[in-house]
Image 1 (cartoon, rainbow, N blue to C red):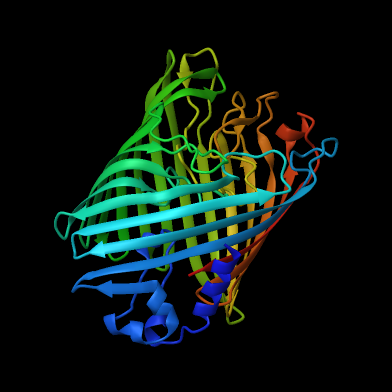
Image 2 (cartoon, one colour; image 1 turned 120 degrees about the vertical axis):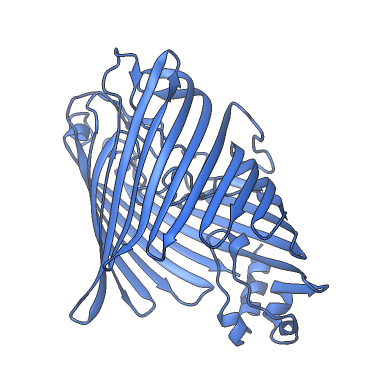
Length: 449
């Protein structure tokens, strides 16, 4: 692996053509922009390895990434009495191949190796020594219609309910069948998917386990250049799911509406979701509302982006009413409230102002989050939506979180980032004996090719 990374760095050093400067790496690498012409393989060494054309309309391309993270906590569980002070190191290497045959067939394969050392209590998102992250075949029936079969990472809309889980060391994959319609203004995606359950070894993940599955129809409409909407229906079935009332089979439908765009220089991204279904003998009735606003201003000739986000995410109101009001965020971002990842998006109210500015290739952001429990009768959950802090008292205020992110984009291939977080526990945590300030930091270096 080290030799491959060294060779790749050497190849990147030779990139210089105008086409290569237009190269854009995307979060999902099957969506990369590859501006190479067929004759570009006669230029610098990088295109010869990156892009191999053959036939009139066919090509084979390669790529990947390497990410290193050093992460540290002090008082990870808000208590000095426990041994919570630790530093660990995470590595993630991904390698992919993308084959296109004419305008009809598309084959994409991506391997993942996520490892770490110096961490004792591992979670499923920390380690997966070697696995198939994506492997799918897409057939384009027409310019607008395509069908996909296989494994892929998937993000819907803003990623509030379904995301690729980029923050943690191991991404989330689904085995699925998907049908998609897309033109300039409309996109409709329908699929049946089974999440891949990660295990830490080599090619040992639990696949096609239908104890948990998801079916969806997701409709996006671009009405104007500055006004867009999403409408969606998601059905999730999960056996032996644990919420505050206990453990049972959870079957729920999520009806969602999102509108996003820009109005008089104000960027907005607002979303509402209502859930219904059954949890054992209880009836599910849960909801969330999210409002996200951004405005770009100038202060002392320095561009600044101001942001304000607030969410209400329902929690269970009473254990004896035969209703479950705890919202299930399904498959959200692993770092929903920052890489510190102490609280997950269930039973919460949060207010989240932020500001961001840029100095050349350096981006600096500062944010603050205040957390309350939506219901004093429900617990606080972790990002995996497992109970982390039980409802031991009736106090609502959870805590204050202050975070910073400093990112340096050295070039399109290499980025550095430092994230820090401090969480001051509120009454809910303090009354449970968790009253010490949490400190967190993570350094990330990522190379893409």
